[in-house]
Image (cartoon, rainbow, N blue to C red; front, top):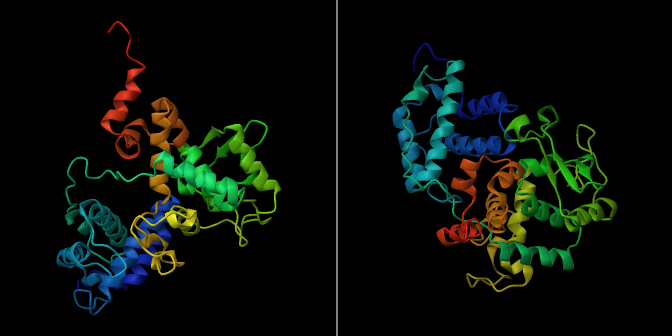
Length: 350
């Protein structure tokens, strides 16, 4: 250990980093950094899994980081899959910014983060091609309309699908952000009140809703399924639980739950018995290979909009995503789908 460094435990270092980034990062990004760094601190202090027990961040060097990368790539924790190139890139990127902040308090040498190389991701490999298709989404919405009408779960899935919003954006909505006269929603950046948007004030926008979508929201607000609660800032969240504004993990678990085919009475594509399936239990929902989190639901929504002929710039503004990022990461149409979209724009004489 260098005499120029000040000692700090791995878990204390993670807490310091997260505290300094609390108001800088969008909610989803913050949760991602927390998840990755907790895993790193867990490995450093684990005598069985880690590269020896490391109780002081001063002792972390490039060999330590490399050993952790090998662990994440080839073994990982029992409840996590080994990292592929894309997920490893995210892991290492987070470690780099983590060590950069730790250098400010002399927990690691200055410039240490710059010596950590990012894995090179081949072109196209950083695109998540798994999206919820329109047929599946409509089946879920039909089920909600018949059996779970105007519930918090119904409105959550409906807005994810119809507005292409992010998880943090949906969570930020208040009752006052819904305009029943104009059938519109207002997404607003409120970082001082616990609901920041990903691109901060650049994410602020008003989104129009079809009348039948607005009707469901109005029925939810006025009906018996919405809890009349306020959050810690005295605001009235649009989507509520009995405890107030739902956290991101709650909203994500709702989507895991309702994208399991068995929840709609369908036969499991994996041949599992619903009565014995571990993935149906609370806390294990994400283990079902058929479930979708909000991100691929958002990607499916964007793809469906483009397939329906919605211009790229409209989808970009509505979903708060640049046209370049939209094409690369969200619009997962096949080459044939893209051809069909272009067909109507080709003049007859060309």
